Length: 260
Image (cartoon, rainbow, N blue to C red; front, side, top):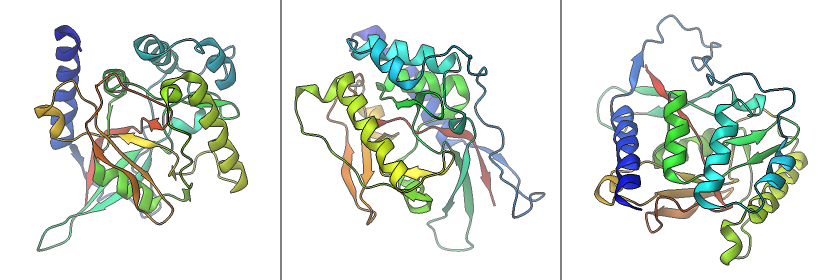
């Protein structure tokens, strides 16, 4: 990354890390057991009647990659070209890992990875770190940590088996993104996954980690859990912040969490 781009990513990363460390706390005292505390959803415009579906959008960006593709994806998402099932967050509960009285933190996560299109025709889209943080920050969300990714898989109502494609230079191409997307859609159809179900196992996650602060210009990748709960991808900061390929997904987590 050049100096200006690196500073932009670092500024966004600083905000996300501080936001994660100081999650807004709200009381659940008035909530009933059947109440979903994650009722706010994404603050996006309604999806336009003439907005592109996933297949059409993939055709439009077929020759794009890197920053050009990121910009096109960010424009579509912030304009509201997002499936309806991604507009409502779902609760995932974390238990305190410390001695003494137990504490429960409920985080609000999107049911699937960011996608462009409609409920019937959507494309799961990878993004570089800067673009992912831009979308998250604009919507009042952040990226998950490894622990949150593990909890999402543990509590998902639909778990898909990872489907890696052959490694090679094409892994970053839009053609590979579209090919893998079609495979995931077939998996969902086979298990009759409801559109709004919490789904895991189909992608690796862009995650937040303290290592990003000591290694500026990198992206952290983790996850792609098998059905038995083991992760194919251990935490990695090998790649530059703009790196993105077909197996990467962006799962958003609300800045607001609920303690006990």
